[in-house]
Image (cartoon, rainbow, N blue to C red):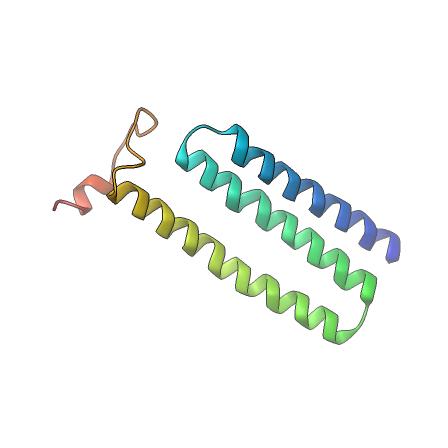
Amino acid sequence: MTLLGAILILVGAFFTLVGAVGLFRFRTLYARMHAATKPQMLGLLCLLSGLALTIRTWQAVLGCVLILAIQMVAAPVASHLMGRSAYRQGLADGPELVVDELAADTDD
């Protein structure tokens, strides 16, 4: 179990690193938001699973599950709100918006 926990921690660290590199490498706002949420959540899932397997107490498992549940709710909501705010301020317009479905909802 300790070996599996260590492997999961390393895999989680790798996904977190990939997400951080994506923040610097991607050019558009929406691609950066994708890099900030998707691999980070998978990395956090692996890290917390590895931590729970390594520590092996009910308090640690409960804490890891609670942290993961809060992050799984908060991260997509925060990403959505940042994207909508950037769109409304005109920071997200550009050639990457092929289909603009939000324009019909925000007729100001």
